[in-house]
Amino acid sequence: MKAIKVIVIGAGLAGCEAANIIASFGIKVVLYDMKPEHFTPAHKSPNLCELVCSNSLRSNSIQNAAGLLKQEMRELGSIVMEAADTHAVPAGSALAVNREDFSKHITDKILSNPNIKYISEKIDALPAPSADCPVIVATGPLTDGELLKSIENTMGESLHFFDAAAPIVSAESLDFTKVFEGSRYDKGNDYLNCPMSREEYIYFVRELVNAETVVLKEFEKGDIFEGCMPLEIMAKRGEMTLAYGPLKPVGLTNPHSSEKPFAVVQLRREDKEGKYYNIVGFQTNLKFSEQRRVFSMIPGLENAEYMRYGVMHRNSFINSPNKLDFTYMVKDIPHLYFAGQITGVEGYLESASSGLVAGLNAALSLLGRERIDFTSKTAIGALAHYVSEYCGYDFQPQNINYGLIDDLETRIKNKVERNMAIANRSLEIIRNIKALCK
Image (cartoon, rainbow, N blue to C red; front, side, top):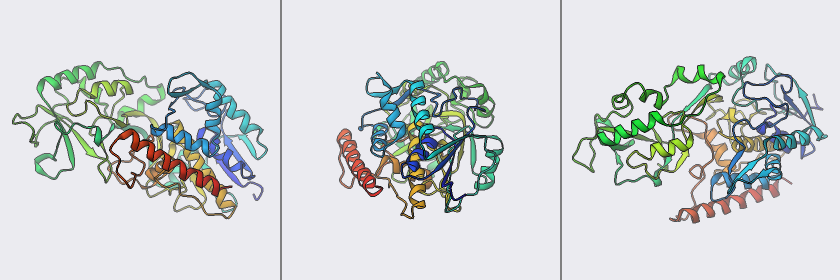
């Protein structure tokens, strides 16, 4: 076992990122994946790092948090960003790639790396980690079967089997001339409220039921609706269903108007500082563009900035807060790491960044060096701290956004200038970390 320094299970974006950075230290890696003998219901290509949803990796501008995350990963030698930049296709300010070339690039790099041994094998039980042989589990959001049971046995009752997450919006993007604070029947001020007149409500419901939804894959359909009803499905049961359900106006008084609201959309605080809010009961299968369009009809949300869109899809993920630390290592099981969407990060980039953090720290621990906290002042670190420390109402997978990254010590009102200052601070930290890792 001494010859096997790190075991990585799963050769998606997180697993390949982890394996590549570990190998860059001259450490041997055994990378397991069930391809090409077996496939998940979502995968078809025998190549590693298959993109199954979109060829777009979102914004390339560091004024956008996804663009900052990309640049941080580039600084650290990300194999995913190397492949993406090499096989980019025109997409305006976004980074889009040729999917097949992107996947083949990473596959060729991994299989030709002398420090990485790739084994096509379906793993049914977690290997025991040790100081001489850390284990990184990066099996993705469709982990199932015996391996899923093994993870459950190891982590306790901590797995969710599908996403049913409501959108999250930035507080500073709300119109507070229309939105008011208050809980029902004057029991505190834990919520923000968006009052709607009858006309506004009827128009909203009609647009909602006719909005375009994401087409679910066959294997997702049974799981999604069993435990949680999408907003648009609920609305199709009758024009007044929402008014008597999640949008009921009872127990609330609008200080902006003497008229009693016909319906009320409630927003619940998602963080201690009140920087962003969850739209209560708005779990949905609408396309992201349709969420922006339809939800902008709600008074106060006309110009809402979305930190996370509502999603409903098959997704197994650990209830990671207080179970993982800032390196994605299991707190109670040294040398066992998780990476990718199974940790509660959402998206290709975020998944890859978690693999970088887990792989880097597994390598450093093997070399007897101190593990690295990227801190919440960087995009990479903010994701790790969100996953490990979230203390809100309901932990759900999360994309990177500037709301997760620590604010500057000096307040900058202009949003573009503020994001640029945060990005510059972040990249300086990343470059210092890179220098320490040499």
